[in-house]
Length: 495
Image (cartoon, rainbow, N blue to C red; front, side, top):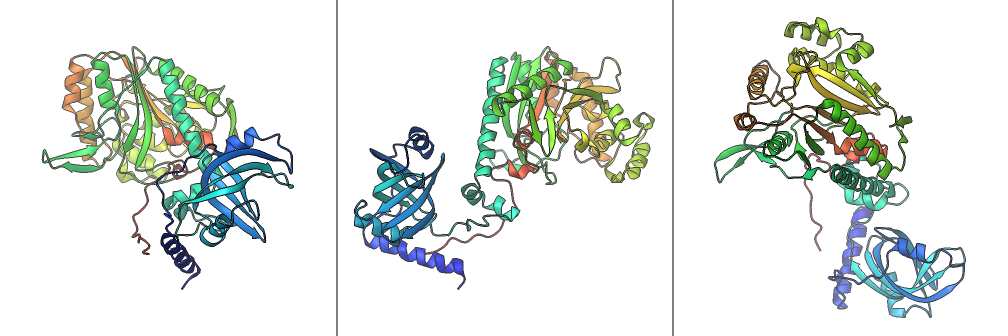
């Protein structure tokens, strides 16, 4: 029997003993009066070896305990931090001391009631008078000195990662603040938050491969949303002028440091605006969120000093020339595109004239450290975007990059129903040539456009990538609370 199995066996024994003594190891509730951070703040001026008569009730997970003869110590961790509890002969009832020593283990949730004091060493503590087991843990926590280092185990057992690693909890607390700041910005700009379907009979709004499922009630195949774009633009047709949605997207694509099949975005649509207005609003939004979440427009990401006060705007065509020394104006056919793809070690079988520039961009995007807008993408790669008034071969598209991360995709929205129908047909043809991410035709969306949609700009921002940027993380899995992992068999421990 291994060490972990021995520990589990011993804990199951304690669980049985508790029940025999009439103690419920899983009670329904516990009344608390304070959290750890509140106590540290309230009694920060309490001097060493000073006692109070103030009685408090606190609950949390016991993450450390030690026994020194007539005195026992424990560290209780709640959602706000940690605080020490002390059980001492002649101060703590003998039954409580016996319960703590013989039936409580590190990892258990306990409730403690007692008075506040500060130890000789200066540690704010609770002198325990009453103690309750709130949850008996059966499996041991990872050992404190090495914790969870295996990345896959950390992602599979995020619940342990959160217990052990304070910095991991802080990432997800900051993610919540980012979402809150985005909603505040949208409200300030008079945008209405709406909800659109996750299950869609025709997927669209992006170039991506969808997940497919089936609705038995209608005996129909449907798709998980790859983007909320088309329903949101139908809201503009319906008369709303500024709408946004924070929602999940599902894309059946590869997994890497910046991609996960399930991820979250905020998308907004602004009537009577174009992509120039969109860039202005995006810049203002990111600055607003940075100020609220980081308290500064200058911060560090992966050893690079990022300055949100300075933004560059550069056409995709010029960027490819600058970073790859490739003149894409010479690409006239799919055959030309495949030759360029081979030159840059891209798979020519997946390359067409429509997507070659987007694929080339992926080769240098990690060099776009300071805030940069890449603009004016080929019209063939942007079937939902409006052609440029200056060059009809280009679409009024922009993508912002910071710290080498692609944060969003946005454009002046195409609202010409005939041109939109033509683009859908071209996408279907592109799919036949091997581009599995090409977009299907959506006749209902065409019908909506035929009723009239005002000129508009739409912006879609990846929440995970924005969180990566503002928490200095390099993997999308580090900012998704429970990233999708290849399933494994799990067994429930039996008593």
